[in-house]
Amino acid sequence: MRIDLHTHSNVSDGTDTPTELVEAAQLAGLDVVALTDHDTFEGIAEATAAGGRLGVEVIVGIELSATYRKHPVHLLGYGCDPSSPELAAELAKIRASRRDRIGLTCQRLNQAGVSITLADVATAAGSASSIGRPHVADALIKLGHVADRKEAFRRYLSPGAPGYVPRYATPLEHGIKLLAEAGGATVLAHPWGRGGEQVLTPEVLASLKDAHGLDGIEVWHQDHDDEARRQLGRVAATVGLIPTGASDYHGTGKVNHPLGVNLTPPKSLERLREKISSRSG
Ligand code: AMP
Ligand code: ZN
Ligand code: FE
Ligand code: FE
Image (tube, rainbow, N blue to C red; front, top):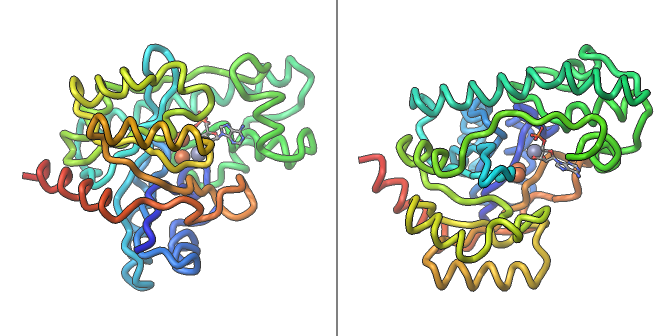
């Protein structure tokens, strides 16, 4: 069983349509793929339909933008009901904040001498329901200001860089509750990526499980080196968190994370399914 539980389509900041993503999953020999776009379920119906045609199981997923002690963290939800009103309202609030910051992002970039307009970003975002900095990055690439998304983040879009504008994200404890109340299982995405190990210490991970009901942590992820994977695997086993692995695929040629580069053990998927069925009543 080849299981990849973290991928993005062009409904957020990936580049494949949901259908293309499931086609790519089939080509990569995956049996199960979760579509986990940032703060939107909009690609799920299309991906599920493609999965039915192609014989790939598509798991309903989301990557919720959250904050823990003011640090941005990403929370994966699996098997949630997209029509849950509380969850839908929170996601709409995040997406509105994502859209609202783009104008200011362009202004700040202009002040830094980089010419870019709202229309440039809108073109790069296409029909995406969830707009993010990667779309600004794509516009910067098209305008010839940078070579790739990585350079765009480093020079212009990361915290401290001239085009960085903060936005709303859900407090993590509340996000865990919202996703669970919508019938889902929760997994903290790449907890030790981008300096996360300073904030999400083993003690914090244990308390997120014991006090707030977090179900799992991503262990096998490209942001984690071998040592981080080893330590996170041990934390998961000690604390009883479900360990998962995934590619965090964003599309062909974008970020170098091919589908299936990391996989989730079948036993972990089984444990996630048990959580989901215990919550759907
Ligand atoms: P946003 O959703 O607007 O906060 O942008 C964050 C997203 O940008 C992340 O989820 C990644 O998909 C992507 N990202 C973050 N840092 C980088 C980077 N250094 N290079 C390329 N993509 C990045
Ligand atoms: Zn992304
Ligand atoms: Fe993420
Ligand atoms: Fe992601």
